[in-house]
Length: 422
Image (cartoon, rainbow, N blue to C red; front, side):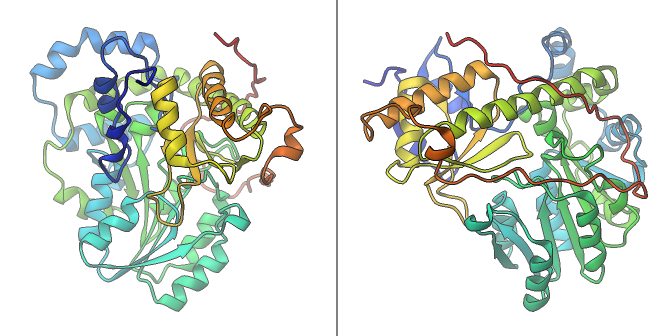
């Protein structure tokens, strides 16, 4: 019997990862699940914000929300956006669905590996999906010039870029994305999925949202659930010129947003400082967690600007077996990438979490490693033991001629610390 009491067969029942609720129900009352699978902000909302939501829960659940246009107008006001450039939906995946139905007519190009709905959704509706494979030897970094050449050769009519990309965490500087949009101004559509960009600290204003809305064929996608650590609410939005955003907004149901989403939208402006603090804490944890993972013998850790790391496991390890082992013996939920196009189960995506949780993850991995090595995975020098090291890319100072993105981003540095294991 597994130490957590979780039947790991639940992890093998679907193409996607088991949900947190599936595992929690399988574990039984009182069991603790540490989630390294779902890329969520661990520091937001704050406990005080959850208390406020709890106090209002009765009215939130009992009464109808405002219509989507009203909630979208409020979100635009909070984020200093023009309301006619915003379409808000029940999660970014709903927007991907409508973009596919309304704006993708023939074909779409997408680098892989990436978020699966960008390949699956258009294939489900009979579109041609032109997949541009990212190479492990390049650290899965996207070369935009090579990608443009691929798009031209394939004659793709829509191009998608995810920045920051999931699952590898690669970030493309803002000026390069703007150049990419302008180079492809003749396409039907250019989509920049920025679902994870708030977690990047490479530039002060990393988003191309303000640049997309003044271009004829550009769309930027945002995921509020990921940024605000509230996946269960299901809310996201897109930015585009009024013709594109209006076309999508008209097709969305009048009440496609729930009352919890409306409540959080109204809370955002009162908690901007807490949100910025959560991003700084997460950047600190990303640096600390990256160093810890690099110490595991034979593991390759790819640089990331997201709230997750892509790692390649030692050759003798199995991602599926490790995932099951960590759940069964340590109550740790992880994401092996065997079902991602362009990946194998030798890769895992691990969400950035606080230091104490990382200690628990690394302990579980070292325990799993003992079946392959007689010595500890920490015994050798990390520079020598890692399968391959990837240097963090250097990002130049941002030019001063770009449109500033609304809102303030803190640039303070935090010194990483290790929490006491226990």
